[in-house]
Amino acid sequence: MEEAAELGHLLVFAFLFFFATFMVGSVITDVTMGALCPGRDECSLAIYLTGLQQAVTGLGALVLTPVVGNLSDRYGRKALLALPATASIVPLGILAYGRTKGYFYAYYVTKMLTAMVSDGSMMCLSLAYVADRVPEARRAAAFGVFTGVCSAGFVASTFAARFLPVSTTCQVSAVAAVVTAAYMKAFLQETDGGASSCRSEEAASLPLCLPSSSSEESSPRLPPLRKAPSLSEIATLLTSSSTFSRATVVTFFHGLGETGLLNTLLYFLKAKFHYSKNQYANLLLIMGITGSFSQLAVMPLLVPKLGEQKLLIIALIASCGHAFLYSIAWSSWVPYLAASCVVLSTLVNPCIRSIISKKVGPFEQGMVQGCITGISSIANVISPLVFTPLTAWCLSEATPFYLKGFSLACAGFATLVALATSISMRPAEVQPDRK
Image (cartoon, rainbow, N blue to C red; front, side):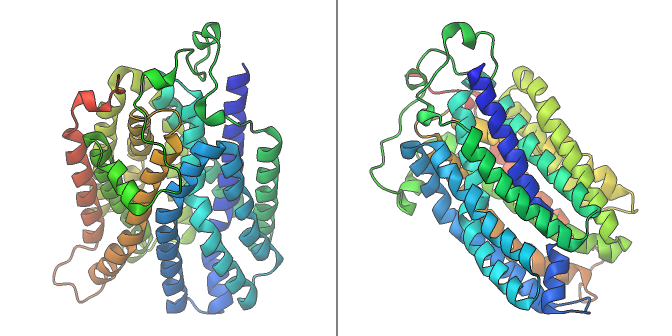
C-alpha cells in the first residue's frame, strides 16, 4: 500500500501544480492588455511579446528539459521536481503583488526564465516517477491517469477563474503555488531512480506497484552519461532505434498540429462566428472535462484490450478529425461537436510516453521523457511561426479563396503525418525489449 500512497501524493501534487499554473493563464491576456495598452482592444506589442515568450521558453525547454531529466536519473526525481515547484512561485508572486506596467515586465521576464525549467520538466519528471513505480503492463493506463489528473487541474483552475476577479485570481494562484511546493516537500517520497520494488505478494494485488523481478532484465540499458547530455547525445539517443525515431516524428508533427490548432482557433471562431470570451472558455471547459474523463476512465479500459499502438492510431485519427471538422465548421455549434473528439485525441501523449518508457531501463526514464518533451518544445516554437501568419492571411480580405479555416486544415494535415508514421510502426517495436 505504501507504493500506491506515494503515487497518490504525486497525483495531488500534479493537480495543485496545474491548478496554480493555469489559473493565471485564463486571465493573463486581460492583465497584459491592461498593463501595456490600457483602454484598447488591440495591441500589437502584447501579441509580439507573447510570441517572443513562447519561442524563448520553447528553445530553453528544448535544451534544459533533457538535462533535468538526466539529472533526475542520477540524483532522484523528488530532488529535481523541487526545481519547477519552487520556480513557478516567483512570477506568480509578482503578479499577485501588482499588475501595473513595471510589475508586468518583472513578471514577463521571470516567467520566461522559470518556464524554461518548469513547464516541460514538471511533466517529464512526473512521468519518470510513475515509470519508476508502475510495472510495464500497467504503465500506459497509469500515464493516462496522471495526464487526466493534470487536465482536471486545468478544468478546476479555468472554472474558478471564471467566477473570481482578476486580482483575486492572481493571488489565489500564488498561494496555490506555495501550497504545491510545501506539499511536495512534505509528502512526496523519493523513488531511488526506480531501484525500489514491491514484494511479490503485493505486486499481484496492487496495480500501481513494481513487480518483484528486476526491470533491468526486461529492458536494455543506455550507456551511462557522466555529465549533462549534449544535443548530439540527445540526437544519438532519438535515432538509436526505429521506435525512438518514429516516436520523435509522431511527437513533433502531432505537437505542431495541435499547437497550431489551439493557437489559431480563437481567432478563427471570432472571425467566423463572433465568439465571445465566455463562449471560448466554455469550449475549453468542454475539452478539459472530456479529456480528463477519457484519460482517467477510458484509457485504462482500452489499453489492455487494444495495446498502445492501436490506441495511438485511433487517437491520432480523432485528432485529425477534430482539426478538419473545425476547419469546415458551418455553424456556431459545430466547434462544440468537434471538441467531443478530445475524448480520444487526448490519449496520444500518454500512449507515446508509455511506448518509449518500455524501451529503456529504470535509470533512463528521466532522460528519454525529457527528450520527448524537448521535441514537443521544438514544435511549440515552430508552430506559431507557421500558423499565426497563415491564419492572419486566411482571415484577411487578401486571401484568393474563401476558406477561413484553411490554417486549421493545415494543422490537421500535420497531424496526418504523425498518423501515417504511427501506422508504419511494427507491433514488435512497441513491446519491451528483452535480452
